Image (tube, rainbow, N blue to C red):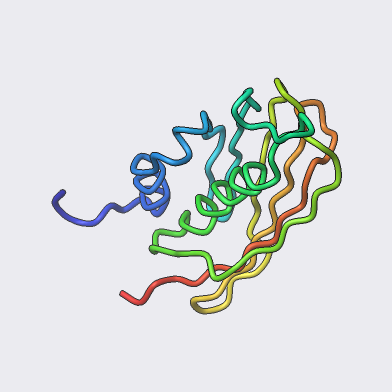
Length: 137
């Protein structure tokens, strides 16, 4: 690849193109903007736990993928420094879950991003807060 891209969103687009984990879970990028991203996933049979609910770790992974796209949308390689997730409702087999990430704060190399995961139709399934750190160049 020659030269640097003039579009800061290209960092996030390239990260997404090189992400086999999100692809394996059937995630779909719906929207990408500076400081934001929307990603969707349908809960499959291999994604439910012993109670027939979407496995919490996979719901968190959906939110984490949206968070990763949002925090890489400014053109700099950025990684997670940590996150917290609160589950409010259970996802179920066949549910289409949509994670919307938005930048809440960005100071120097540190950022805070909130992600809301909803069942298609609007019912909130989980709230996620991620902390990011931009890598030194």
